[in-house]
Length: 98
Image (cartoon, rainbow, N blue to C red; front, side, top):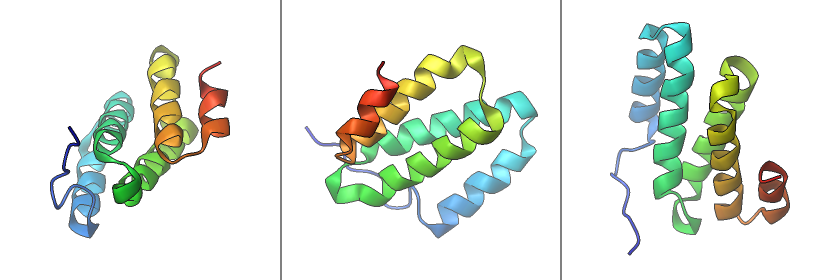
């Protein structure tokens, strides 16, 4: 059964709220916060909710560049593979599954 995302999961107000909350977190908590939001967006993202997957991809790019934590490396790779798989980018997805 397909999951229907909440209407405001990643609209402009939700994004502003997310980034405001992100600023209140300590450094190590910020990475976990980003991973959790990317995971939520990925859960609801599909071909009908392409923008959610692109949002998750952007968050993962930010995580990779600024917050990467070796202990979360496997989770991050699996999440990126899932995002790219749902976007139909199998070649990219496979890079993260190696």
